[in-house]
Each structure stands twice: as C-alpha cells, then as structure tokens.
Length: 171
Image (cartoon, rainbow, N blue to C red; front, side, top):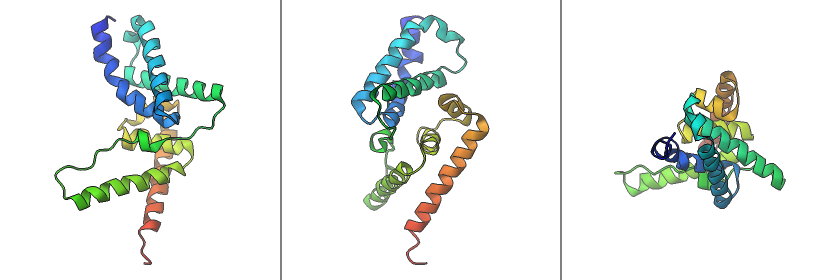
C-alpha cells in the first residue's frame, strides 16, 4: 500500500478512531496518543492491510486493544467520557427550543449510558452514535453476533425505561 492509498483508506478513519478511543480513555490527550500509535502500527503493516476484509473494523479493533493495554498499564478503571465521545450535531433548521431539547435529550442519554455496564454502553455507542453495523460491532468488540444483539437490546431497553421514568410526570 503506497502513501496515497494509505491516506485514502486509513487516515480518513482517524476521527472515528479518536471518538472510539475517547470512549475508553478518560482524556482526549490519551485518546490522541492511542490513535497515533494505531496509525503508526497500520503504517508499519501497510503491506499486509490489503488482505484485511474490513479495514475499518480492524482499525477499530486495534484502537480498542491499544486503549485497553494503555489502561491496564496505568491500572486505571475503565470509564467512558461520553461528553467528548458523543459528537451528535443538533438538528439544523429548527427553532431554538427544539435545538435545546435535542441537546438536553442527548445529555440525559449520556448520563444514562454512564450507569450501564460497559459492554452495553460500548455496544450502544457504536451502533446508535457511531452508526456501525452489527457485524462491524462484533469485530470491534470481539463478540459474536448474538451477543451484540443482546447487548444492544438490553442497552436500548434500559435507556428507554429510564427515560420513561424521567418523563412520567406523575402519570
């Protein structure tokens, strides 16, 4: 793989890799270090990358593994920084009230995700925030397809139940 192909296929993934690394690391600086390490490894292995079936999933798997390795070395607890990881733009063309509601709703979901078990929160984040397919999530998190579906079902159910409680208004 030459430099141009590497830029077209790998470097375009760095923002997704960064957001995913932030969900593992507690700081953006550490996440940048992880992404840089992954990009270096991918560059070193550029000649074998053409054999990878799904380069994006492989890259995200490397981000996950390097993040976990870094956390183990530092002996830190895994906890997501959802404020930095969830980059969801508010709807455009709406009145300010609806935009405010969107931002507030996003914050409430972020708080709910912090209380979920890590496996559920990561699966939810990859599917609902990052938009990955089930197979890609399975590759990234090293889970089988049925476990991805179960985790996603449980995460959605937990978030929905908590939101219903918050908005019940005494009904």
